[in-house]
Amino acid sequence: MTRLPSCTPRFVLIALLSYDGQAVLLCRPGGAEAWRPVHITLPEGHTVAASVRRWVRCAYIGEVRWGSVTGRLRVPRHGVGPLEAEVVIVKATAPVGAGQFGASACWWPLARLPESGVALFPMELGLLLQGYVEGWIPDGEITLDA
Image: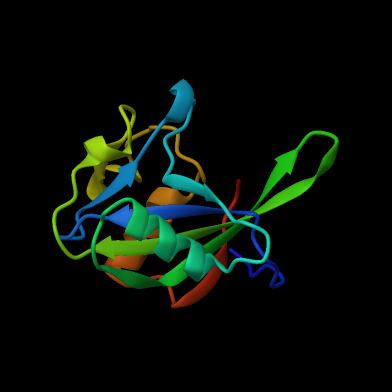
């Protein structure tokens, strides 16, 4: 994994960890092929932090702790340049039900993600979260494959 040049992401994937740090909230909106964290579009002129705080507030999650690792990726698009994206990790400080995020949302045990064979977006999500929780990924930004 290499570092990307600093740029403003166009969308944010929020990897919400359970309060015990053992599971992540993933969804498959519209029957998508890959499971992914909750996705929010970054409004023009808004920061990632402000947009995530707003989502946390609107989703009635309560207090969260911010992760020290951020994943960055470029998502290819046909006929136009890639979208810039960022994966942020936040941890709930109290239990949160998956049902409030839609029918396709569920809590996935982190221990099962890397070897599950389940399609994830981004592909390295399981390793990113495992490395964060186990402490072997250094703090800061890292590049992920789309």
